[in-house]
Amino acid sequence: MHLCTISVDRYLSLRYPMKFGRNKSRRRVTLKIVFVWLLSIAMSLPLSLMYSKDQDSVLIDGECQIPDPLYKFIGSIICFYIPLIVMLLTYALTVRLLAQQRQNLGTPDWSSGWLGGPTTALGN
Image (cartoon, helix red, strand yellow):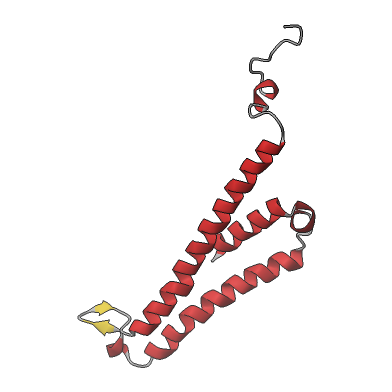
């Protein structure tokens, strides 16, 4: 969840630098962290509440297992697949945005003169 939040924040900071890049207040960052932790607690709390009273429902053949297939299905979607899709999407958008910004700078090899590479003479 934290990595997902970081990827979204990174993309928004690049896409809208004047709105998101400069307005990172302590309150906004704290709210994001609290949201991620609350979501994580909300996903793990039912497991603790459902199976804390009856250990036989969790221990199957000496192994700790989650017998509820619906909880496993919903938990894996919310905690893994949705953040995965969001991260893949935001990183793809970030790469595309950076490629567009590089094209808008002018020549494709603009950095060669900046980094000390070969430059063309004006008199030729």
